[in-house]
Figure: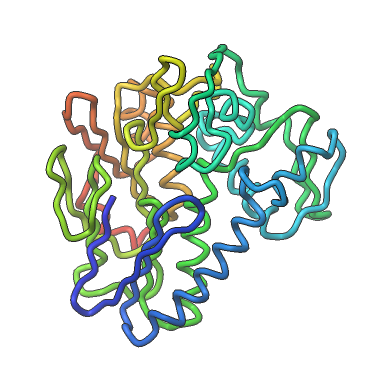
Length: 322
């Protein structure tokens, strides 16, 4: 998913949280100060939520041996978003897939995963289940059963984009777009015509339309837009072709009829949870998204594009619904 900056906006691109970062503001004079605030906030998210940092708060839960652990308000919020996504998707998005991610080789930053040639043993093993995790917001504690590893990859970046966009729009008083790896959140007054976002299968430069694969350009005025797919983060290990979307029912990379799914929702976190769940739900995803009233675009492996009611017309109307 690619965000195109209009002439009345200013944009900058860099990397954090193991992915691309794009910040766009409607007041060019505020770009640098907003970017400094964004960098600080993303550093805080990384320190709290990273599965790849041994010094993160999330990693500390691995050594709690099932005891309640007091966590920061930031990690508590991230965990609440993950558990809410699990409930809303009937467990299709489940934060207890951490051990499954490790088992398929995704146990470090993705730039290093593809360089690793260690063999993997693929075994069907259902994720422990999100209901086994207890979050007590009143006491600020979380209890994770011994042996259960959490992974917030399906929700944390989208939640971080929502959180950053809201904060920057409030502080700067202008329209703000934050995109983390294509998970896009907007806040404040949008540019004329809305934020123009190109939805595509293949990640590429902002100013270049994709050389292959279908794409669509939509205008977003509020909320969030996310795309999940099984084609971008792929690697091979021991003759196995693997990717990062894990089915909690098997603990293995999902086998879906869709190669990418894009969804618009009132928040980027909701949109991203829906896209990941749609890949896991497979053939039933279109009906599920339609029932929820979510505008969506699903691309099959042969390039066939299927949309749910409201795509893309309803995207410009999200401001009234949010």
